[in-house]
Image 1 (cartoon, rainbow, N blue to C red):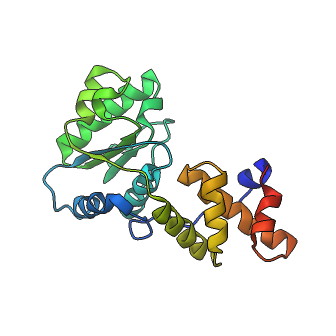
Image 2 (spheres, rainbow, N blue to C red; image 1 turned 60 degrees about the horizontal axis):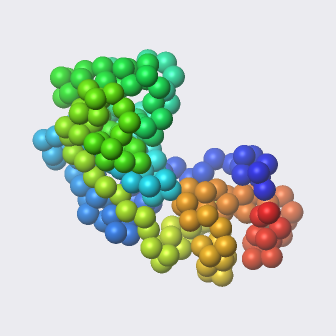
Image 3 (cartoon, rainbow, N blue to C red; image 1 turned 180 degrees about the vertical axis):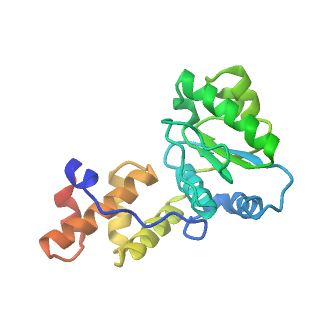
Length: 212
């Protein structure tokens, strides 16, 4: 299973349109307005538990702006139309300094800055000056999906990859494995690859073959 999860074809490109909002419908609407420049504030911060969709949303915002998430290596492009930083709680000391400087430059130039982490700004174990900056802009909490919404997300992801997912498979995954949506989406991708490799239909027994 580990090898299948590592050796998978590229996932469908995250977009705001293929994000399953669930209880985050209002958040999604705010992000679309923010991306369209319909809000005064140019910076935003999204927080919530792992697997709730923060990375999907940041990647979608970055793709719309023609940039990629900054991974902590190299310089942050000061002239980019959008700076996007994920997992801020994992930033090293030097990376925090770089992000702090990038935030200030983006704000001064009126450019957009998007970031995400597991906790609200006040609960982040970061430099005080950076924590303060992250709380200056729009701050949104993202909530985990319900079972129904997670099933919809898995079904949609399978359709994006080109196949229909049996509802019995989604129900089994939600009751027998981790509820981290990112992990579950990778299982769907691995199942698709295994089906192509073995030339067998995607069924629940086939899924059980690739899981420990």
